[in-house]
Image (cartoon, rainbow, N blue to C red; front, side):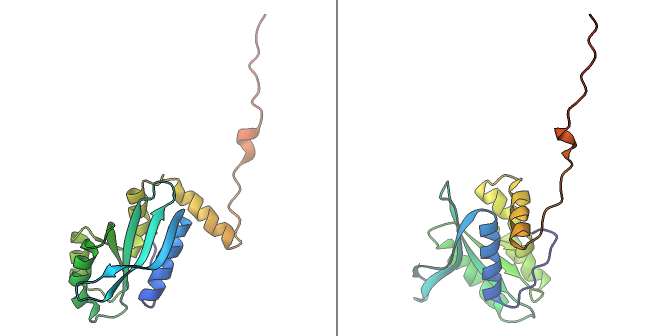
Length: 167
C-alpha cells in the first residue's frame, strides 16, 4: 500500500492488517505459526506466514508497531537475528511514528525489514505476482466493502464502420 499510511495501535493490529493484505493479494495466511524455539528457549511463533497457493513459496513475517519512542528499538537487532534462524525466508514489517529515523534506516539497510506502507510491492516481487494483482485486489476489496468499481466505457464493443470497397 505504497503511498498510504498504516494507522495501527499495536503489533496485534499490524498482524491483522498484514494478514488481510496477504489474503487480498491471493496468498494463504497463518497467524502465530509455531516453529521451534528461540535462542533463549522460548517457543518461537512467527507472527504471520504467507504462502503462495501454487508455488508453495512461503515467507515469515514478524510485525512490530510503535506509536511513541520506547524499548522496541532495543529489541530489534535480536529480532533480525532470530529471523535468520527461521526455516523459511523472513521479513520484519514495522509501522508507527515511534521508530526513530536512525532505526528505520537501520532496518531497511538489513534487507530483512520493510515499512508496512511498502509491503505490497515487496510481496509482489517476492512471490512473483503480476502487477495486475493490485487492480484485482482493489476490486475485491471494493466489492467486499459494497463499493462498485467505476464503469468502463462500452465504446470498445461498438461496431466499427466498414470501409467502402470499390468494384
